[in-house]
Image (cartoon, rainbow, N blue to C red):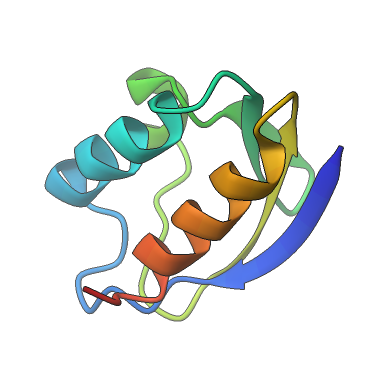
Length: 85
């Protein structure tokens, strides 16, 4: 299991369209992936769960990945949230 703090650097934050892309990114991996903010943890592959978080640009979140490809999942999610192309 890997746990990593990440900052949302996408200018719009995680709004409905960027959440959809975030879920596509997380869903590429076999590992279980969660996003944690304050005391709330949601499945990063769940549109309903992610929509409940309301994450603006600049927000710091914790991403947890657990599984065979957890390192790649964390790396790819971090790249997405960093707004890197």
